[in-house]
Length: 148
Image 1 (tube, rainbow, N blue to C red):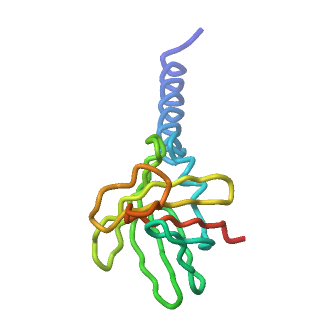
Image 2: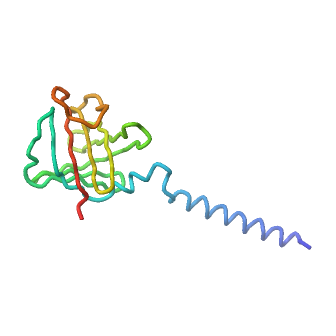
Image 3: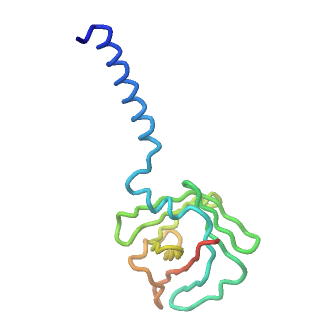
């Protein structure tokens, strides 16, 4: 037979369980965090196309993602900022806002295993609609491989 005291302890126990679930739910990845997790790390530029022409990437260029931070490095230059993705869009969207000029670069991306392809338009321009850098498009297409 349940007494008032045992009912009270049961209530406290259930409250603690619910509180623990709420606290751990905040740490659970959101359903759309899959790509955020997959993007984490450093990506090395393998090829670069602009406006339909292949451009030699020069010395090592990398793009690194950690949490909501993005770091772009080329030679000795480094730009840091924040990024946001929307993997539910088709094509998937990537917005990068760098601290130096506070402009947002609107891009799209494709992530397949250890290969990341990013297509971006001109600064403050519209977001590209396809993963391509055809002649006359003024878009840049970058292919990265995960740094191992």
